[in-house]
Structure formats: structure tokens, C-alpha cells
Image 1 (cartoon, rainbow, N blue to C red):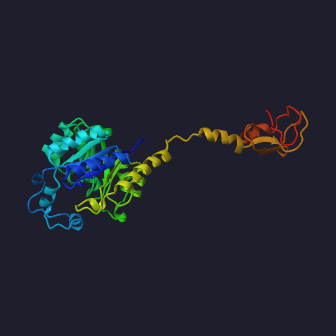
Image 2: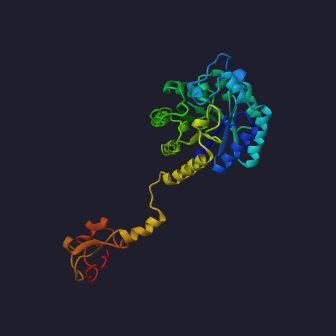
Image 3: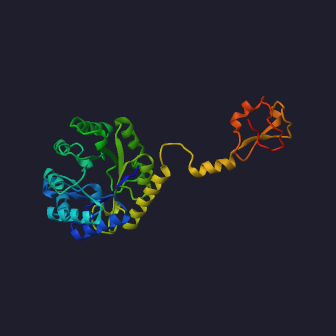
Length: 333
């Protein structure tokens, strides 16, 4: 099954629509299925006295508080409408995470195909209620959560009439970047096994190996931040992939999907041909006269494998030789 790859542009446009357009082009070139942004009105999201998170302070030299920082990263509804239309033109799905109810209404209006619940809103019941009211799939990020919190929000959507297959739960660690000892990818499998839910991974590591491993562990969705350049000023650039890295990650994911194959254990067409060469048949170990009752000392198993299988060894023993055999002739039943 093909993994849904979300190229997370987020706010890495730094509030400039031209950069946002460039990010769409990069996502298309890399082979992503979806390019995702973040839609918010800073004043509806944070108070004037809200401090920046540790990673935001570390990844930004600005002395702005969180409100001031986010104001600089806003795009207008008109600009998001332009981005949505540009995505349609470039044949990539447009998605944006809404951080307030008005923004979610707007995004649905301009045609998003699924709703992404960010980790910070997994316990925001008004937002969950609004998301559940729309007839579209839900992607639920779970950074900063324990299993009980995830189960509570997941069950809320089920109680609201969402089908299990309409919900994908993304394991996530809300650190930017996340050190490898805090990734804990096996927790993704715990979520799947506990809730019998579709799973994915929202990755904040600095590497491409982690999402590839997540795919091998069963992730159906991968979300990964990317940027024009890690050297740009802004809170998320340092934990994002540059264009060549995003392309390499997606190529590796597609290769991983091919390697994983299907769950069926069947020989390939090449293996069927090879089996004739490398498997064995029952042959005469020595010259055998016609009519002789075959004994174990008369028989051997040698390549090629186009004769009687050695699995029929016990059936051949005690049978009568149908003809005269020379050493290494294949035995017939």
C-alpha cells in the first residue's frame, strides 16, 4: 500500500507567499502527495503574554514573544486561496492545519480533502467537535500525549460517527528537532495495537532514516517538515529537510514500499524458474535393473528439480523400478 507523504511547509514561508509558492514547487519535484501549511490568526491563537516554546527561542534570534513571532508568519485567506489554486495547477493536494474554528471553516470552503488536528489541539474539544462535523478524513497528531489522551480523542471521533478507516493517528514527539532517544517509534505500533487504528508518523528529527523506518513499521502516513534552507530565520527551519533531502526521503520511502511488498508468501516467477535449477529430484544412486524393489541405498537426491520431489522419498522406497536405470537417471513413479 502506498504511503501518503505529507510535505509539511508549515510556516517555513516566513509570511511570504512567494516563498510558499516555491515550497509547493519543491514538494511537487520531490514527489510528495500533499503539501501542508498552517492557517491561523495569531491574535486568536495566543495571548500577548504567551512565551515562545524552548525550541522557538533556540531556533530564532528574535526577541519577539510568541504573538509577535506568529504575526510575522501569517498568510491571509486570499493568499491561502491562491496557494490552493496553485496546488491544483501543479497537481498536488493542498492541505493546511487550522488553528481556529474560522480558519477551519475557510479551509473546508476552499476545498481541503482532509482535516489535520495538530498535537496542541488534541485536547481542544471545541475544535474536535467542529472537525467531526465535516464529512472528511481526520489526521490526528499526538505529540505531548500519553495513550489515554490519544484514546479519549480517538473515541470521541468514533462516537461522533467517524469510521475507523477515516482516522489516522500520527505518533509524534513535539521537539524541534527531536533527539533520537526521544523518538520512540515503537510507540506507534502500541497505538495501532491498542486502538486497532491506522497509524502514521509526524517526524521532527533531522534525518531521513526515521520516517523510512516508520514506513517499515506500518506507517500509512508520513509528515515531514521541509524548507528552502535551514539557514533561514524562523522557528521550524532547523528541524526541516532541505529540498534535496526531502526528495531523497520520498524516494527511499517508495523504495521501502517495494521492498516490503505484500503480506503473501509466494514464489516469484524468477524463483519458479530457479527452483528447477537449485531444487533436487530423486535419482538412481547406482545402476538399477527393471523390476527391482527400490531401497534407500538405491536412491539419491540431486539437481535439477524437474523430477520427483525428495519429499516423496518414502513413497518411492518399496516401489518397483519401472525400467532399467543408469546412475543419476531420474526415478519415475
